Length: 243
Length: 145
Image 1 (spheres, rainbow over the protein chains, first blue to last red):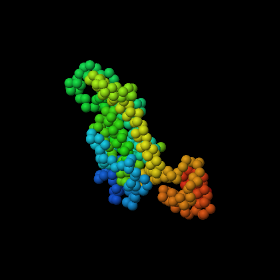
Image 2 (spheres, one colour; image 1 turned 120 degrees about the horizontal axis):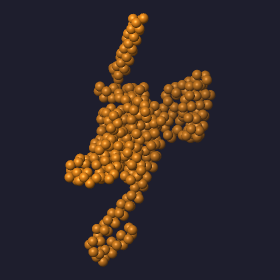
Image 3 (tube, one colour; image 1 turned 90 degrees about the vertical axis):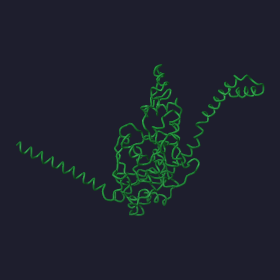
Image 4 (tube, rainbow over the protein chains, first blue to last red; image 1 turned 45 degrees about the horizontal axis):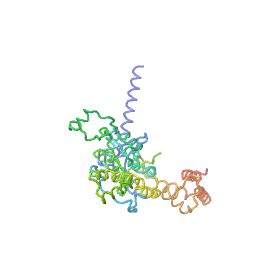
């Protein structure tokens, strides 16, 4: 009896092992050969979007061509003029590779937020997986506005309240690092954000970035994905239509 | 208050108000200017917002599915209206073009249908049936349902 149970267990373990190795082999086959990875040695990645795990990868059809709105080369300018690489000297621009890294690190561990800064009607047409919609209209509000307060709360900034005498003194003497402090706000725990919109000719995310900086959000915690939806789609990367 | 400031400023220039008045007047000027900027802030991007609204109507809802490696595009806004609303302006050619461009597989099935069924499906679409329903009907007709 005991022997048969052991044998059964061994059989189950062997079959499980076989199944796992088969799955790995299938995955290797799936990403081998002509598979077009995100970057070298990174075939795809996963992000959480609306509670679901979304696989971000490139369209594998070598004949795939971008069609529709984002394939257009010209739009009315102004307002849809080509934007500079950086919207503010304190903010760095990033490309797709840095965005992949961001998705796999800060976005995954909760220290980063990916912001779709477009108005909701644009967001509803499709977005980059893992993004939350904080429209530039909200991020351009004054610091007293409830919408801006809500956004800052989401992004991890804290109101300082009453600053004690000694605390103030230490700050004034330069004994406390005040890099991410303003008179009323504490941005030390604020999240690193990547802000994007429709692409190089879109002014929505630059406006959002300037709005955030106007209320004291530190420039070194903001990155600008200038390529936006246009470049994301040009590379045939996964997009999602919000539910 | 701004009008008062302008009056005071004029008086200051004409009659030589004491120097201590000037910093106060500058503060008032800054306040007035600030007020003007703030009051015009919503209108600053009101035009931009209306341009954005006009532009977004040209965009097709698109889902690029990394899993299957395909791109799904939903109907362009110009042709897709609220469910139940008649699409008076959409000709049968436009409907077929839309189908061909965005739902190639379904369009293949559609072409295999007899003329009577194709006409029936076009009329459904024109009368406001959502695209999901239209696609289901095409498959139903193909499967003789």
